[in-house]
Length: 429
Image 1 (cartoon, rainbow, N blue to C red):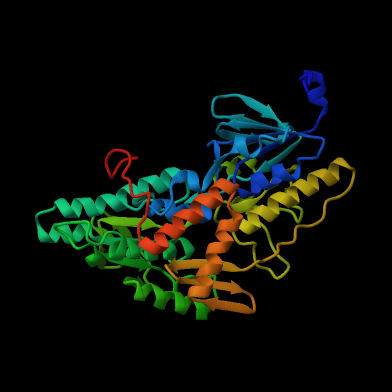
Image 2 (image 1 turned 180 degrees about the vertical axis):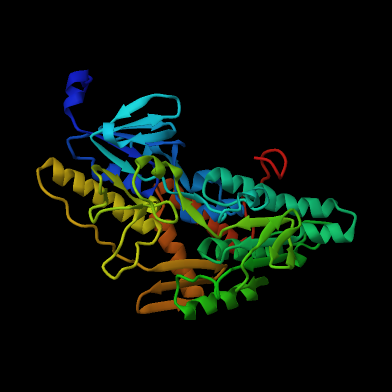
């Protein structure tokens, strides 16, 4: 049935909600407003929603980019009150209730949700980025995949034994879930996936080091599970270095004080900083550049502006802040939608309450750790639990089916089907 387009005056009377960021918080907020009498503009620099918890699988050739991402337009195609814009927001002008895009265009809003996430943080040592790329986007994952796989190719072509060994030295900086997952998977690739494929090197001789500044890996998990994760990593052949703050990174590797840990390939998984867009709000930020928000996730000086996901600092009743994880971002997005709907009805929104569903981290094939409060376990059962949970929370049936098939194939064959080197040069994006 043909539907006549809205006139400009009719559109102007409908409250305009602008959502910046198509991640978990932004997408769940847009969905939560599906039946609301608003028009929504969802803006993102990319055209896709990314399931970031599995990004390391793309970087290590276990999955392809489309397996963990889906076009935003496709996801929201049936939600008629949403318009998707692929653009970059340069600044927020909260006093005028508008934002400015990178091309100079301005866009007004009645309500605004900032959910632009986080980026890499090198603790004031930005020069390290050239030698230790991080992992936050699909571009990062494809670049990192190229570097990891190219290292083995360079080792195969190297005549000098010392230089050959140098190409087979890898270092992962940061012992959180991303670092642990990368280190364990890389060790499995070297010892199983690449076995019998090279003629001049033995990939299993590759050294994979996981470097953590604190006393233990997975510091957000209970100490008992952290120790189990460490033992599982060591069984895979990963060298775990704790109490080892990095003082320098260059082409030769990582420096821990005066000690050099040689590594031609270094991956940064140690620190994150909030999106710089928060600075344009003109409000106080925390040390990581995040926005401290009110109980309903709005900004104190600007009640029509909300912040969610990794960009927000949300205090809980026990004094701790809400962690920057996917379930928290989804809950925040849904809560912002509920708050906007309440305001449209002339009601006050309720304070945000975070529900902690626990922590999951995988170390490698058949090895993972699960923390559900009183319920804590590791090993094969935890690995199966991790696998089912991640398949379930993927966006779309196609993604779930593809990931499940890829993982089944990898489990029985040790092969990783996305082991294709794309792009030019291993040191340029």
